Image (tube, helix red, strand yellow):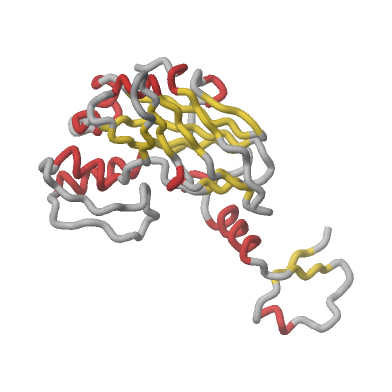
Length: 240
């Protein structure tokens, strides 16, 4: 078997003509990123462990060996069982547990920022909602209605800045939401991951039945080849 050697300043000390059976590969940015993703971080770091098979979810879309399924939370009882006493439900926010099963041999990049919940109520104009950051969910659930949260990336990576001075309960809720939120932009090969997306429904949870979850920006990391968009009809969900 050939030995792979990544070219860097350290490897410049290798002889000009390496021994037979040794291949030198150029240090490409995309190759480096994939290598870091697959070797440095364990798969459990990408998202919550997923016990449910998304192929069994009624609300799902499937193509190019990727299955995406959605499980919307509607009832107050179900929210309480997952989120505890203070939950997104109290603030009129819908939580949708989204599952990804990547059956490809290559990792897939996901752009969470472009995901939308498209609401199509009869007789009304279509609405497009972007996912809320954990901090914004906590703002709406715990702070006064006139709070003015600044725009945030839906789910920041660990180490990013966070708001302070909002109290212990706010910090605890943000931490709890981040632990269950969809917080990864990489779908590992031959793995299932999942996490929650949060959308401000202004307490109109029935509108989720008239909605589609639109996921437009996915691409294979090796060659940046785009996948066709996914659109999941939530009317098929059991609504518990």
